[in-house]
Length: 63
Image (cartoon, rainbow, N blue to C red; front, top):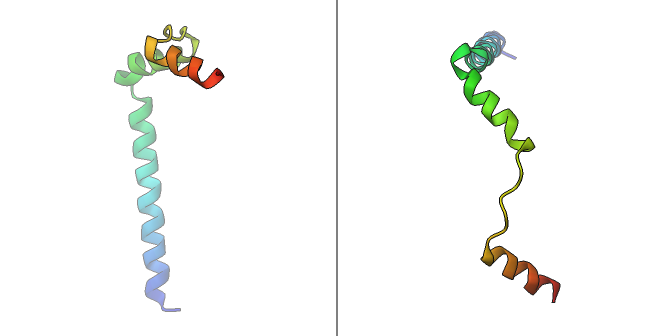
């Protein structure tokens, strides 16, 4: 293979690493803490009561 391909793959790998580290730092920055805490509590919340359309569909499926 050509030597250029080795340099190109090296540049691509470095670019992907920098992108990953940038996204990681952005996600762990302090100004996202409130939103992530709220999203972390979503699985613990109760589901909303079924609406009339959903309960009608469930009854039709049982029949």
